[in-house]
Image 1 (tube, one colour):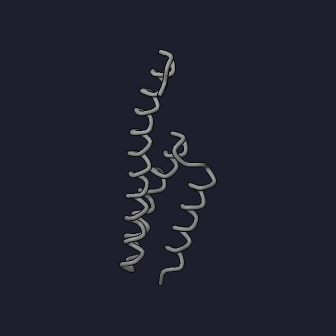
Image 2 (cartoon, rainbow, N blue to C red):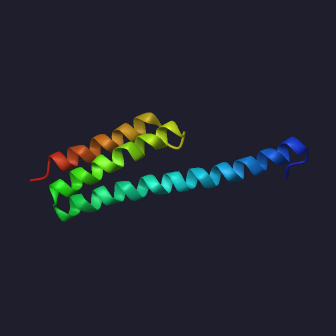
Image 3 (cartoon, rainbow, N blue to C red):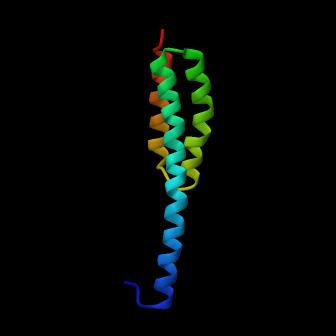
Length: 87
């Protein structure tokens, strides 16, 4: 348990930040899932639209420090490759 006043304050700050980051990460996962569902349904135009909406959200997670830049780029790249491979 934290002893000093500054350590106690840091615990409070970390708790708040953790909640914010959890919601951001969850939001990204939701957008990615929508793209994957559109791919699974076989609707290429819907998948492209879903990716167009998801891509800025994924990259926003990078600027907020939730995800690493390369991880986000890899996710976007793989999703777009799967959409491109659709018939």
